[in-house]
Image (cartoon, rainbow, N blue to C red; front, side, top):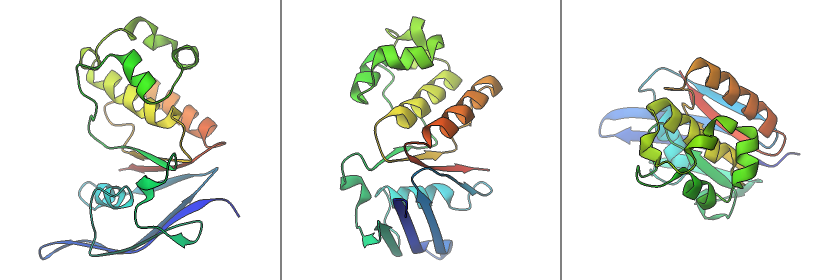
Length: 181
């Protein structure tokens, strides 16, 4: 059986507003799993529960059939790209690659269009370039599972196709959970 993460019996309320009711999802190494739904239906809340950023009224999270309270505490198990920018604008792209443990030469061999921008600050990129770079950092980083919240938002169609290709290629070594609407 493939390594997997299972989330079950997730209930989340904000006051009287019921956001998640008995949600179950599992995702495994070697697979791309999608969560689809309209805006505001709780997709991002579910990812925040999985990554330990939000506490639900009830949830059961298992890794390899062992109940785990905090997946993020297991080294190199999961990484996460939220649907909003999350890196400081003043950090240089080369520094971000180092932070994620990525080789600049290997990264640029795969994504040569970033070569001229390696010494640029993250904030100097366009909105679509920032989004693409952040998603690629998370995808390429060494983790067993990558969680991507709406990774195609603000990315131009040519780069959406590139992301889809990379996701399919990288599933050979990791499990990928994606949300989209």
